[in-house]
Image (cartoon, rainbow over all chains, first blue to last red; front, top):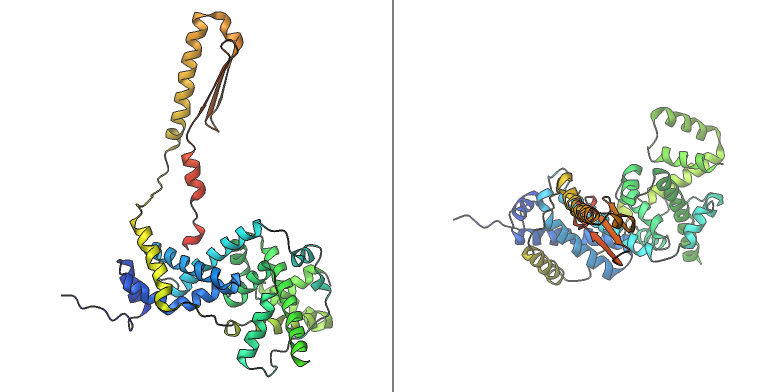
Length: 200
Length: 165
């Protein structure tokens, strides 16, 4: 009689193999291990807890359905992250269709006020607790339009190249560069103003 | 500074330029204080936005509750029969509209051969691309539109390969 695997100690590739054979307990363990990461990516893009929860769960279901396609070229967590990013981009495209352009977008398309902004130095060496810095970055990210936030997340946090982002966002490389530039300058300005607010 | 130059500075920072272009930009930064200041700002912002500085987020629901919805959904999709898409060959896709057109042709030919005047007041139009055939008879005050199934095109449109990476 085959011995039952120890799911909690098994490595991801072993659990993936079991899940590919239909073992839902192995898949549940994978979900438990990576659910926060997948949820965090959905939340960073959608900025809404309920939507992020629903979409991350949908990503897990899609992951299960496509598990036979997973070859192990990237880690399982990276593969799942790609699925959730694609779902988020679909969701954001749907939302965008139903709304008018934001002021941020109009700014960008009319030449971008951020291009004329004086140069700011957000000073990365400033003595800030990691937690404080993260909070400040998160607050600043929250104030960007979804196009600018998405391009920044995909480039800085997911470390994707311009051409990959362009393909995912269904736009040109030039648009990616322009959005990234705008997003960075806006972030520098927001981080500086958040600092000023905290000093008051 | 022109927008194009600003974007070149950024591309240099992101290592998205060739080595020759990189050398050119580096020497530009060295001699132009405006370019150097902007480059420093972009570099500082990039270093702040390092992956480890992203605010971690945790699923608000407990493990069992979160999993239960996924498990239910997996069970539901597993119960559904697999819908495999197999494209029909091009000649099979044309078969139905062509057969329809042929039938109408025979009908019109038979009518014309029995009543030579009828051809002047009957019109037939075949559009294979849209899979429609229209037959109009003024004499009988009648219009027939034959529409073929658009199933193949619909199946093509619903395939989404982008998610399957």
